[in-house]
Amino acid sequence: PSTTTGLHTHLPFPFGAAVSVNLMKNNPKYRAVVTNEMNSITAENAMKVSALHPSKDVFTWADADYLVDFAQQHGKRVHGHTLIWHQSLPPWIENFSGTKEEFELIFKNHIQTIVTHFKGKVVSWDVVNEAFENDSPALRNSVWRRILGDDYIARAFQYAHEADPEALLFYNDYGHEWGPTKRTAIINLVTSLKQRGIPIHGIGMQMHTRYNQSDANLAAAINTAAATGLLVHISELDISMNPEKVQGIALTPALAQLQANRYKFIVQTYNAIPKAQQFGITTWNVGDADSWVPGFNGAPDWPLPFDRDYLPKPAYQGIIDGV
Ligand code: XIL
Image 1 (cartoon, protein in one colour):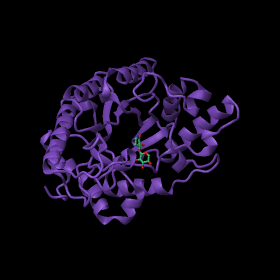
Image 2 (cartoon, protein in one colour):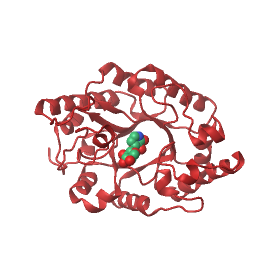
Image 3 (cartoon, protein in one colour):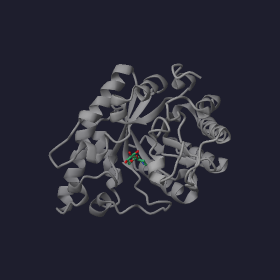
Image 4 (tube, protein in one colour):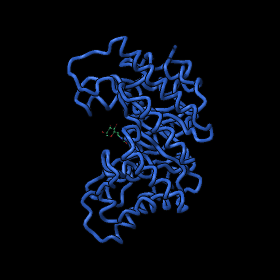
């Protein structure tokens, strides 16, 4: 397949990637892939708390606005990531030492200033990201929860909805495909928010997965999320080909084909949930050269449908073959 046919044109739901402002500005091959292959984008880092809100009375919009302007000029959807997370926090939030009442106002103002700034341009938000512990049903003791209590999650959705009643609001997390423990806790949370009338519209499942994850676990993740009736976003898809973190190995043609089959299975399973719930699939990063996985794992890896030169890999065709 050529990089100019447009992967998204082959798919019945939006297809996008997490993008870096720096690479959009400085790498023409990267920018061409985003322009030609995707019809949705998520900012990899430019809409995180530390990027947008570095100190109490300062909001810095330039990088995020650059991506939003690009998207508007090229007719791409923008998904906002992320209003409330325990990572990427500036010190003034991480080390907050005032009262609960003050922090509630900061929390509300943070959410509403950002949602208002992008109103009508960013159609959807990861309102809360990764509220649960790693592979556990327990809520994380983030600064948000420690000061504001467990129901900060519900209030984040209410504040976002007040600022932009049209925006689609998602709860985003990882580990749905690892097994039932964390998955059930996530599903119970979003179901209870929905039952309470809290404005939640979708589930984002990150799906940072690996080549040897089972069909059963991947299907359980997608189908359990769909059973809630909410929109389902596979929000940060990548498939590690070296989860064992072996040093000095290379991607063989056989491994690349195995990866294509895994992408195909995920797309096939996703394509089988009700159309009205298919918000789309977003890969985390664009090509293997800019993937966050090698740095995170400290080992070589090739998790994405485009290679180090931004040419399509077998995974590209695997995605097309999934529909
Ligand atoms: C990652 C980015 O890719 C990195 O550049 C950054 O240093 C750390 O965050 N889950 C998420 C994403 O929700 O925001 C993370 O992105 C990857 C894991």
